[in-house]
Length: 140
Image (cartoon, rainbow, N blue to C red):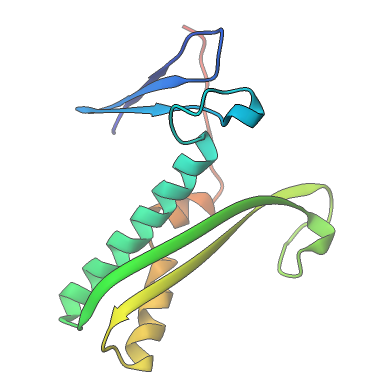
């Protein structure tokens, strides 16, 4: 089990993030009241999904010895009215919507490209985001 520590001054939005030996900063943009010292929490969420997607696709292509040269993942997050989402299970209220565009560079066949698209949905972060997640919170 990995552990991430996040702490911040209660007077603002900037947060120090410690993940193992790595230090990062998260903040909100100036127009949202932050100081823009780092990516927003939703940007970090998209980065987690994008990096996991790219890693998973590349790993599969390496195992198959396919001629994949590079993977580029572009992501966008928005909130949409559930009634406007054709593929959504619920039609009430708002829901989070993530658009993910994957660009594959290399001399891949259409069959290989299709398989890599299928594999992209198997990355662990994608599976976590599309499953039921329990968050246990304790005040210590």
